[in-house]
Image (tube, rainbow, N blue to C red; front, top):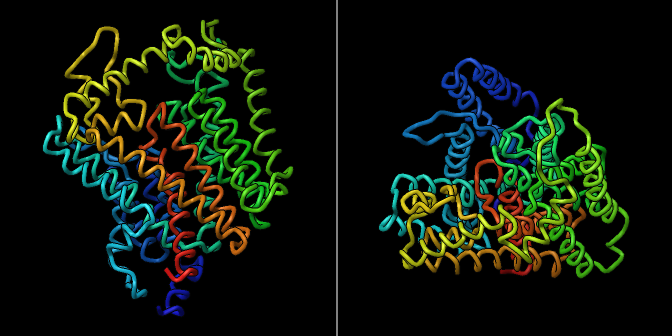
Length: 486
């Protein structure tokens, strides 16, 4: 390995080299308000320049822009600017010189510890084209999966576990999460949004720019564990005011999204993060820097939203809906009496349709992303065609056949096993930043898995915190493998 050359490549880039590309991206962004095509073209030119100069900064810009639906519609499919950014980074990674003897282009993109179930997922996705109800939809979904799980994870993996390289990416993620949280809070307080999302009589479930409250809650829910781990166990820079602000705003966003899946997932993430930290370093790890932001702050956010829920600041008329406390109660009662809760009953019907689709084509499924088309072709009374199965296992089962369910279980087990393995077995040799990054990544993985029991978070912008978490686990695993001589 040419260690000196790699270190020079990872050295921080001077700001004088970044002014040009960042200025062009800023000009292009402003121009999109007038012309999406012209502004987008200028943004891409500046982004290509930025990717050549600095991969970490290019990834940071991708993270910041990914939640926003900037782009063009082509053949009834929206192509985001962030898609072109991902393509740029893929090319940058393809032409990057190979310095390690053990590395090849294949291992650069697919050398993660969970490459086997990922490869099976991609193979099944391609094979599902043979029985796909919509070949265009399936091809687009395959490209999205490659962008997310191959390109973005591989690019973030290039940061290794270097603090200087991760810091701008983390700062960019926290900044955009905070901004979207403030936007969501404004929506909630002043009832800005569709009437279908009315909650607590005078308010609206927040969705920021994601269009769906569950997606918004899922995104913020995956950011929350990263902020919590850095605050509790990270280096000094990770305990500054801006990380505290991010954590508070993320907790607030999870609550005002009224996504019960995000609520349960966040609780599960904090609990299992505490368990892993205890196992790795002992019970002294469960101290006030973990308990106060991880448990007390979300409770305070819930009480704040419950209090504001009784206040009409929008000037609108009273509307019938659940209160914040009622949402908690209905979460429990819906498990006991699912038919008595409209949302739960509808979701059960959607799950039943996913099972029917799996029975219809049990071998290769209806094509990746084809479940919505299945529901359109097989309408049911009083049931609108859902955009997804609201369950990752059933979605992949319907789309990819029975092996899709097995793949979901396998890949999730691989994510958890390697994240926990690195943190527990190598705990004493990890720096404060490495342990905090790994534990936060584990928490984001838990959030993703739990929330995907009732939703699917694989979408533009929404999935970004999770992809960074996978890259962090991959980087830590590679460090562990190198240290053990594997």
